[in-house]
Amino acid sequence: MKTRILILAAVAALGMSLDALAADAKAGAAKAGPCAGCHGQNGISSNPLWPNLAGQPAAYLAKTMRDYRSGQRDDPMMSSIAERLTDAEIEDLAAYYASLPPGG
Image 1: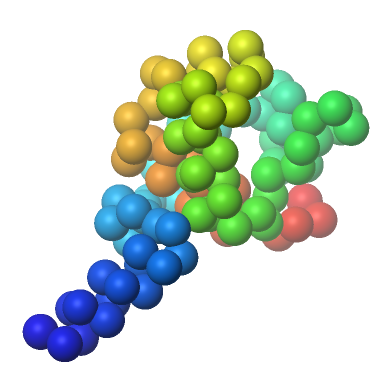
Image 2: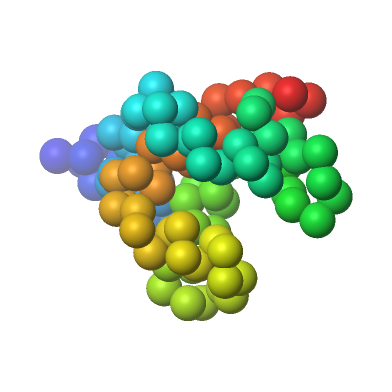
């Protein structure tokens, strides 16, 4: 019981959802095709206007997508994409990009 409480506290302290613990990077890779147009095939953008996603922390990427989905962050393109994603899909995409090497 103590172990569960400590794990849940650690997850909450990191700002992660319980979905993040079950995130599937392979499922994220399968959904990442539309992202490649701006963020690059391997998560490295060729345009300085769009950020690199490869190697970013999964918790950061997931929070950013949830913020676009909720309207807390505003970008017409990203908001329209994020609003169609479930929490699990967001976590999977975040896990995928976090698993990529930062240099591409």
